[in-house]
Amino acid sequence: MQMIRPERFRLWKKTGRGNNRGTLLPFELVKYFAFTSLLLILIASFLLAWMISVNAKTVLLQRSEAYSRLFADNLNRQVFLQFVLPTVVRYGRIALSEQAQFERLDQIVRNITRGMRIDSVTIFDSRQNMIAYSTNVELMGKPDMGGLEYQKALKGESNSVLITGGSLFSLLPGTDAVYGTLKTYVPFRQENRFGEHTGEIMGVIEVVQDLSEDLSAIIRLQARVIVLSLTIMAILFTILSLIVVRANRIMAQRAEERLRLEEQLNEAQRLASLGKMVAAVSHEIKNPLGIVRSTAEILGNRISKVAPGNEHLAGIIVEETARLDRIVREFLDFARPRESRRVLSSLNELVDRVLRFMEPELKQKAVQVHAVLDPDLAEIPMDSEQIYQVVFNIVFNAIQAMPDGGEMRLRTGPGREPLTVFLEISDTGIGIAPEKIEQIFSPFYTDKNRGTGLGLAIARNIVEKHRGTIEVSSRLGEGSTFTLTLPVRDDGPLF
Image (cartoon, rainbow, N blue to C red; front, side):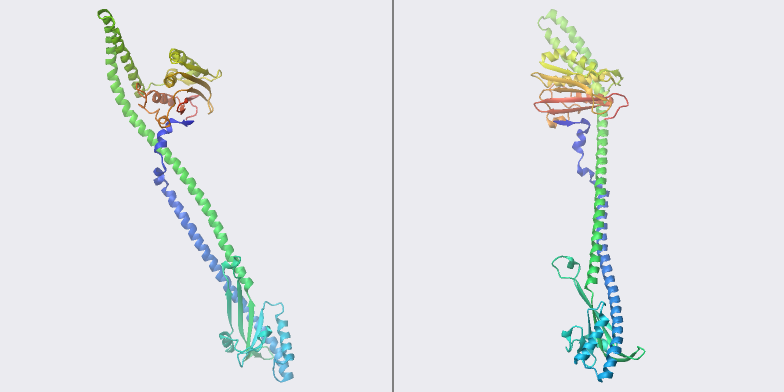
């Protein structure tokens, strides 16, 4: 079943998305600006994460290097006082190849490193590039293990080197883990009894720290910053998208409303011009038609006396002039509609009046009428003659839609909207094609051989003046249903 309100026919045909492009352009620009802003936020987030990572690594390196140097100074003092001096006094020389001296030095170093964040300690000989002592026993005695950092430390310059590996992708399963090793090289000097360095370098101390866990924490922080930024960006993107979609919808509705108002204005202007022309032409035709009809009636009386049997010729003239007179009246009603004089009246009584008047026609066309009128239907303010014309036109059209007879149903009752009543007129006629149903309320549209196409247009104008609506639904071969809805009060709802 196809239900269409006539005031939206032309709006549906002419309102399209393409008409809204110019209106929606500002919000399209807002969308582009929003996407650009989100992209900038994403880039800024990556830069922020990178800066945080670099700064954290710098701070970690500085603190770890300071820690290593402090530890190396303490190790230098303890080894010199507890191992070098006693060993020289007792043995006359230092020879770590001897088991007793090695164990003594190893015990001192391990006591110092116990509980400290130190991975390994190595002491290089100053006379040759060889490892004299290391907590990693397998490195003992290996030559040429010191590099550029060893050479700098021999010259009295403490220095460090950071060896790292891994990135953000290391957080993914199946990738290489993050690792970091800080090697600090400090000169091993002689000290006097006051704990002051004398300046003579006896070797180089290498302190190794494992910073893998700290670097992993920095990378995890970097990942959290990026994930948080992406989350915020997604939330902002969703909010902006909703705002743009909502704004577009509002603008589309306003564009439709604007097109509808423009269409109504154009239609009003066109009908006003047409009405003026129709009124002028109808007025000029009406008087000659009256003269022709009166003359035909007089000729009919004379022909019956002069040429009996030819009276029907005058009757044809009278009948056709009467039909032309009705057409002229329809033109005038459309061009210059009468002002409505509303009084409280019963819609049921008006329906009964139409059915009584149309009873001969209904019998002649073999149309059975089923009227279901609500006995408690409220009276409404209306111009009975104008609403009578509306109901008459709909009933007359229904009869014409059933040339071989059929059924007509009329039903009244409270409307769907508060404080309204409705009249529904249904027939079992030929129905209306979907492409035609959009035009039946247009002035001068008709698919009949003898008709002006103004009946339903006038009916719609009358109903709208009564602050009501008229709707139609139809199926080809099954019939049509017209629904007339009118307010119970003059200040009732507008449709």
